[in-house]
Image (cartoon, rainbow over the protein chains, first blue to last red):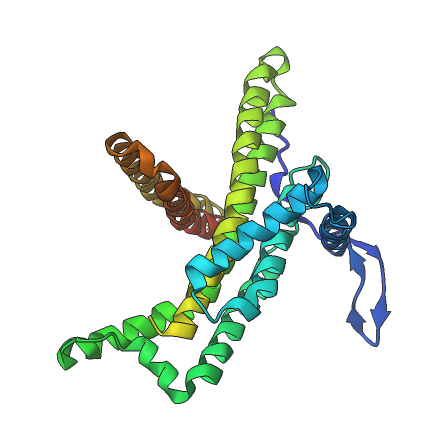
Length: 243
Length: 75
């Protein structure tokens, strides 16, 4: 009995509308489709949800307001004062990752955040943006970030390279955390689903396990969006207030 | 040893990293339970940290899993 498992096929990026401009492949892929769907859903939730603008919010307005409050609370608590201009960025990041993760849980859909290039693009924007913000605000003094206070100079020789390394590894850990969580979750779902297809009546066991893993994946989807956003806020805090 | 077998063994070894994830997550939630048991009123304050800690501990284990996938499917 050969188990024909292809758990990684669900991550294949397929061009839906092939578009080639001067040698560059800018096709509209299934990844692009789901990113578009995420953006449309977020915009619909926020624009249509708050259209009535009632003082006592209805259901959708409540959801829109709660998501706004959640992120603004997170930015205030973790990025400190002076971070208000960056709230729209963190809000966009949080909502996009949240919706992209949740859309991936729908069967036969495509998980945009399970592509390392997508998560790396988001993490690179955060890293480069935060570094530039730090340099604009503090100038060359920003490099004080790598030199903790009150440390004897002998230890500094060891500590500063480690601090620099851990600073530059941030975009990678940010990207890989989200990517690996999404990849692992969906691969597990596909593998157990594959088992269910080949064991006949005993299929209730892998399917039951799949249901449990799906519940875990819902939690992980929300949690990873929250972690991505809160780490962005913490890095912003570091850049704005230098520890 | 041919490359395919070495890849399988390498991927299996890389998954040992998930032990760390298990221990870490257990630690985080054990601390959460102890903290809430000592001071139930603090639950709302401590819980966000517990979830953040869970996600970061899980992430470290998943870095190992990412290496396993890298070994299996990229090299």
